[in-house]
Image (cartoon, rainbow, N blue to C red; front, side, top):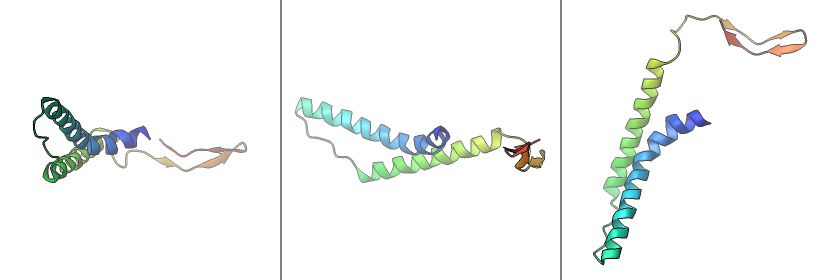
Length: 92
């Protein structure tokens, strides 16, 4: 579950959360000064979502290229029954 949050949800939602948080602060300051409230723009929301997808794909590519072992370097041992217990699958 944590891997899903770190690799997918966090990079995807972080730019949108940063933009909306920044707009909340700017609107709060404008309201306290009595200025006109700036509007939340659809174009900015769209680009923050695009930035989130770029960050998510960059993170996934980085993890794929920098972790794990070489393809085909291990031998797969399927699950089996030993002494009445199921032994989970492994790579050797």
